[in-house]
Image (cartoon, rainbow, N blue to C red; front, side, top):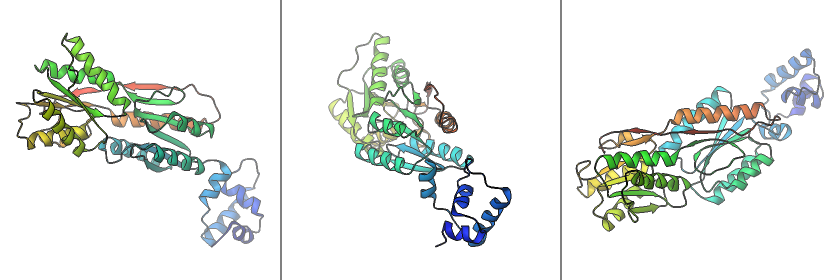
Length: 333
């Protein structure tokens, strides 16, 4: 294996000179002539620098991490595409960290990202990514931006959704369609679910209707199968339900699957509305949903992160951007 010493010998310079050229060290002056000799020797020897060693020496890398609770959820994979495209344009690589909603996995990722000296982190603000883990990154001077999720972390830049208002808009749409027995399907341990549920309750209050107290079922996974299972539970306990507001589209697709299986006509007998517009256009019937500007959110987060990376030594006040979802009526409601 070719080493930095081999390069130094071939170029007729010291190891320190080769190191200065490799790391673009402005504190060490290397003439243009010597720089060319070092680069020529590297080319002739087909030398590839040890990136881990360079990262440790420079305390940084050309890598950005994206932490998500479930990459199988199309919402996060769609955002990941924009993050990857923007990183590639700036010659950065991406580490994708899939926590599975588990706290121990989130912590392990954070510790490994610190050890790898990543340049920055985009993280979903879901419950398993504890505030203390964010603090660990910040103490190592690794820039962090929160993207989606509902944790409130004031010390970092965030791009989030007005989930409460989105929940209100979605539920009021169903109320205006004449539905009062509207079920709500969400996730346990989810601040986002809590916010969207608060909007659901607000909609009934705005229309001076008694809010249903027990038409709520909560699951533990972001999957289509979970949506189907929760729908079965909801309708078994409350067959009077004629409308369902679902935490997200992936679960919403499962709701539609179960309604078809039970031979409940959509939207004639039961209407369904989702949230995030990730798979809404691919269900049958197509799912009415609350659209989130995913590409815009990802671009804003990445622009914030790049600014933090470029101005790493400067103190910038945290910025908080919140987007409002918009209603997209389709065939399910």
